[in-house]
Length: 185
Image (cartoon, rainbow, N blue to C red; front, side):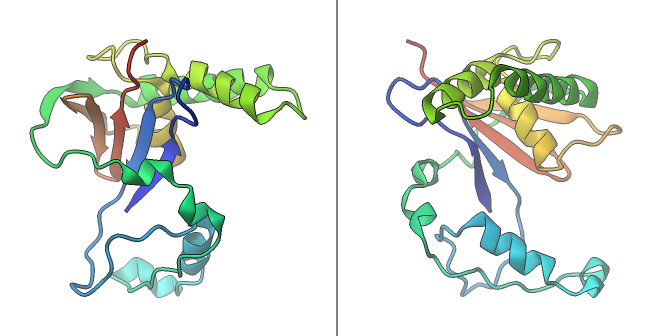
């Protein structure tokens, strides 16, 4: 399952495409090319019985409804499955600090009632910056934000940084963050 965390919202937007990825065992007959509203999926997960912590559970995808399914521009992008080369590790401290600093900077820079275009521009500038102190200077702060917000970070486990072509991947035991870097102008 992919989720779009950050993505460009227009031709001049330099926001990198940042996707979260979790893998699951699926029913062989399941439709694997569906876009569903995240709120509907989260609602189904919240209704799972507590016994779900003891082993595998089944969950049906919500129906594809609403305008959200028709506007997921990131859904047409397919990250590569192979050819990944390891670049190094990203420690919890560096990723967590980058995510927290970005969240604080955006909150301070955007007063209530700010227009969507300005909000997107500030987010793009903040999340496109590289995370300092990593083996690769190509990891944008948006990847740290995705790792943090999706719960993929753990203090005792670094994220592995991998790359292939224009793609970066940060992988942990909890999930993966894939980044398609924006083209340089």
